[in-house]
Image 1 (cartoon, each protein chain N blue to C red):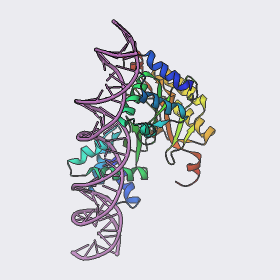
Image 2: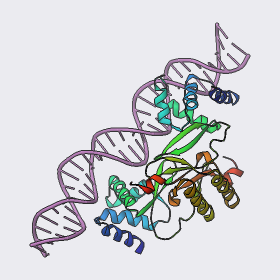
Image 3: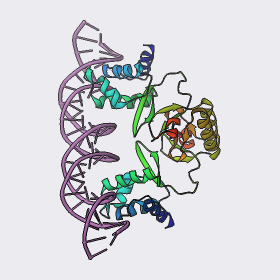
Image 4: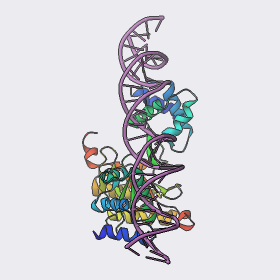
Length: 144
Length: 144
DNA sequence: CACACTATTGCGACTCAGTCGCATCACACA
DNA sequence: TGTGTGATGCGACTGAGTCGCAATAGTGTG
């Protein structure tokens, strides 16, 4: 669990306390490769007697510290994931407007987009947070 | 008000009824150049005795007909705007994660992104709906 | 190892956006 | 003008997220 451990280590380095609730939230995040919504995480740790409000507060703190990445997911909810050093997120995501599927867009698209946005607007793109909306191949072909 | 009128015309062409509530919602949409959230629109037409539920239903119907474009705005709310034929939306938007400002990204970025997504994933990008998240020049330079 | 300080937690009530079912109303067409 | 049906208003409901506060439990110190 070096993944969870390193996240925990970051916390104590920043002077944050290591509590059972935080350990549990980070554990859930570390165990999943997908983005999890706050509510999903809350559901997963509810058995341990951890309250929803605590999960939201923990996630907010983790996000502020840069320990997790966030991403808009579905309709107005936010997905969280541990920020690993690895570059699994070095691409943009396309979200199908019709079926909701998420596709990984080419890495060079991200590279050119980031370059273009930076030079034209001084805008620093955050790929992990960005999703493009459109229609996936299946939905474009078939029915709604 | 040819803008609102043409939207209304589309409705009756599709067999939808022209009602006072729909007229009012479209009027608000036509009067604004920015995306408005459902709640803002609801607030604007509340004086006319139009209920929030009606606004949501109208917006959903308008969206289904393609008469309005939607865009994720801020934290989990949806912005609506009349779909004009004009190409004012032929660019991607960048939303600053820190201050929320929306910047227009270069048109060629959109062109290459759309091309790349389509060829690699068969993904049909909808620029009017897509926003990239990042940090604007001001926030990157200055404080939070 | 025990203590004290204070950040964190659990709780429950609250807010806010959005949705649902139903009775009433008013378009659109004849 | 009359009629039928789709749209509206209403208000209660849901679900996500937040707030304040008292109790609890990490952490560093002696």
